[in-house]
Length: 307
Length: 307
Image 1 (cartoon, rainbow over the protein chains, first blue to last red):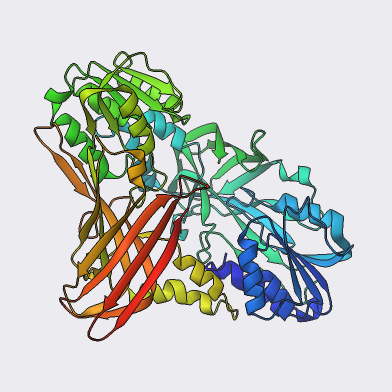
Image 2 (cartoon, rainbow over the protein chains, first blue to last red; image 1 turned 30 degrees about the vertical axis):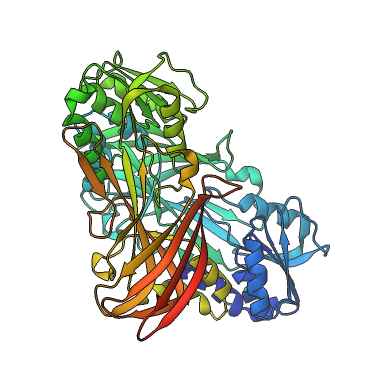
């Protein structure tokens, strides 16, 4: 997390610019890692911070917290949030950096919701409090060919079976903002204060209007994050193709067809996402699209597996 | 493996340029992946190839083998080499791409040795048959500072505890050939036809002579591979800093000190390597060095853990 400046600075700003919110408060840090968010909270005046992580990284966090003089303010607890005891009944604020690729892949949001329902005081805050999933499309002919065409002739052998397979996996990569050719659309918004675990499986429609005459080779999904509820000075950041780099990059869903689209034409579709039944840290993603343009017409339903 | 041209072409050349060796032979491919080595062997005239992999990738290999018309020549077997049965008593040739970072990390060499001792006919061949580990040193002040110095002040916090930890992990990265400042030295050679599993834990001395006046910030370890025993047309490749890129890159062992070395001066030392007791796929590496130069003197012993 530390080397991704966009995210770390967003958390720092959300906490340090809203010190009045943290002063004298009990804070819970879900998945604390090296403890940096807990130290921001302590520095912002929190009465006490409970920092929980199941990884052995917590031993290093303990050294770091001590090296920075916060050992009286921050209690580090190793364990799963679902299994540990806290030496307090309630917490005033939950902070967590739980987001994964495609927002929900390998995510710890379930753990944040568990912590919220068990410990967060009525009217308490969660940072961040809002996550928004967006979708758009891109022209990406050259890369699509290099990535998927590669398998048609591998040192003289036909490995197209692998190429088809590779297409069924969202590609986490940085998309050039100039390749985006429809107006991005919000497809799903999550209010962390109220969302239920079952809401994290969803199917939502989209309708994307082209901003130029172009080809569509892939759909692109990314997310924006808000720290706003209960804060005087809200902070947001985006992981979109037009925003500065984050380690989340974007998720590219290639389609087999290529759509030839004219400015103002619309691609309709549906995006669904749910945890994989066998391995809930994986995501099953289904994208359906339908396009009836002046030059090309196409429809398709593709199942992707993010694992 | 497929996208690393250096390694795939080396295997292809070693097999296809030595067709006379493969003609009419029974071949075993240990850890076959997508099956490309098995297909090279079949194309080179092998009588039959048994291709073994414990991963479910073997299902895709099955499709690929069929798509390329080799289903009568190649038998795919899913399972651990230590647990499967082969429908043959002996094989004439073992092929395997078993090398890991630092040659031995996560390596499958143990499985190759098991297969050799159980199935390889007397006088049979193994491709590759020789692996050589080399060591040298580099000037790398800027990167060392950026990598390890980063932790001294992370958004205002002292995280040097992590910096020290990061230094105990070999860094797998591409080293600029121009940064090399001592003559590389072979520290360990493995003859795959005769090596025993216990020989893969070793401690060896080195003595590195500087080729210029420079600073030493790190030691660098890499390996060379030979396909030569029993072949008319031997093939070799290197993963060193002076050779073309491979996905193995090089392994960089940073030291806390910096040595100021003059042309012709020598750094003496020892390198030891053994599988980690708890997790044998990890490596415990110990580097000792002693330098008594005209300008600087230093010695140290550093334990690295590759996991």
